[in-house]
Image 1 (spheres, rainbow, N blue to C red):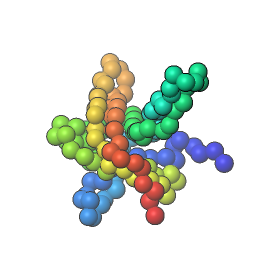
Image 2: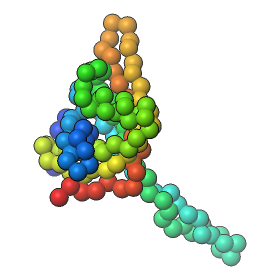
Image 3: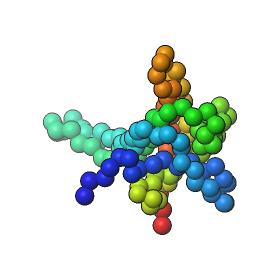
Length: 134
């Protein structure tokens, strides 16, 4: 069964690692989770065909939403960006917590168009892997 994107939310831990408080990033419009595996070329001159093995795994979370300056989760993203600290993020689908990870906010932008809604965009590079939530 297909999943409606409106049923998927990004949450940020606004508590501590020992006592997490998962808070929805307010006014989300879009979230994208990119996962990639680099390849390692193990070809040799003895064969024409390229030979590869899996290399390093990486993941990035991109988030877009309306700008809500007093949103608690957005404030945490902003502080983490400015201080260069790791944050904990979680993906939730239909009120079910799916997976979580730690990451670094590598980009945070705000847009204030004339006669339009103000928006935010964030990029979070995942540290390690996504972990299924039990």
